[in-house]
Length: 236
Image (cartoon, rainbow, N blue to C red; front, top):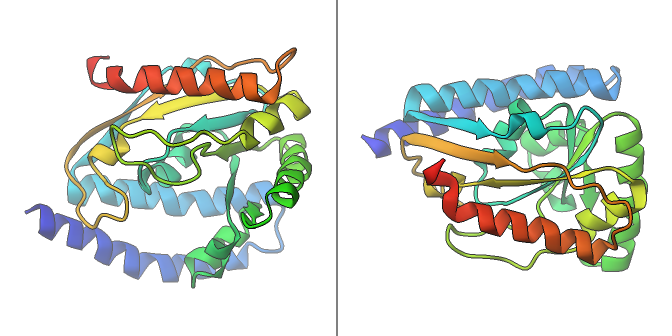
């Protein structure tokens, strides 16, 4: 049944995404915030379809920790699931992502209209400057900036190297850093076709004010909170 349900989910995504892409492209003349709201409806639909076909839902702990002001969200990355769900959990947001994702048919075209910070990871110094310049601009527009410090999806139980870029943006912009832990990879693994039924837990930590902190100090605090929180997700 898991194979069948996962196949139904994939079929729905394959049919709906190209069709809805034309709706997204039609929003091009609109402002960034309105375009985001149009794009977000795709993720809402995909989350609902995921619940119906695969029985996969989620719960959020610490939603009260989401600040009223625009912030830098620094999250664990295990799955494609969080790229869908965060759009329902957090206020309007932009993503720091690999530039090559924008070249994907349909998905990449829509992604390009969401005001992402598309980084060329081959040039680290230039990428850091781009992150800072564009990150400040997006924060000033009222967008949250979502960054995965580990840079890639990490299997459950494993730990990647936390890169300092997100903390650098927080300390140089004054925006609070919001650490996020979750266990989505236990239900929807990296590049996995199968989606297992269950309830994903997302835990949002208290915002960390960057004042008086160096980027590596803030990065270490974020890493410590996330990695200490991960083993306790099932207990809460």
